[in-house]
Image 1 (cartoon, rainbow, N blue to C red):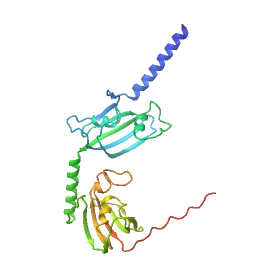
Image 2: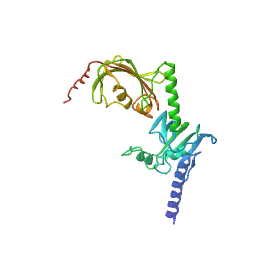
Image 3: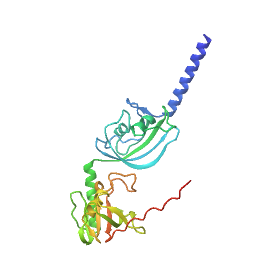
Image 4: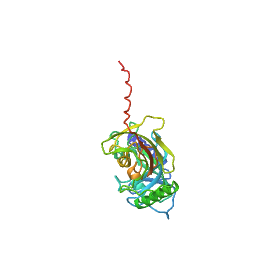
Length: 285
């Protein structure tokens, strides 16, 4: 009888300890029927809320409960879609209004597996949680984004006294120096000098001080391919490219903000400058 009593007491103690730890981890949080833990920092219940297909302009940071993963605060864009699994981030987004800030806790293993991680890191356990701090700064549907970007380009062209009509894709092509010879076509090899700018005229990439860029028409991004195909060797042009034919909504490999309109000054050199081969690395025996 004593053994049963002490075993029961030990089990109760363990349960109380586990519950206490769990309660401490989620202190101040509520939980949805789908199991999503949440805690609002700022709430604007009368503000706009997202609908399916809306673009959400977010400020996001996250951490695990043992701080093994820390994602520093940064601005991102996501689209509100159908949930991938119950209690995921899309369920979290649906709880928010424009201007809201909240913390959401999701099971780390479920989140990572559905995010495409083939194997979980060693520090992720069954009970590890990821805490997302999310601020929903702005909600825009596709039509609103298109209208804002069209106005942005119109204002830029007026300010810079540029005149051009967009092509079907939305490209504005402004020739500044006529080239010579036959027109460039898909598959042609070229060497170009370039300067890429944002719509606010800040430069984020340029060939200045570097070797010309060797490229093959048709293998660059859509707006540049289209612009090059309107040029001749020795020609110069300014290309104004909406985000859809530039770097898309957002590209983690390109240092530009989401939905960026790109302005490119392009010069196609008369002759091809072949790229220099990379120096051979010394062998390690």
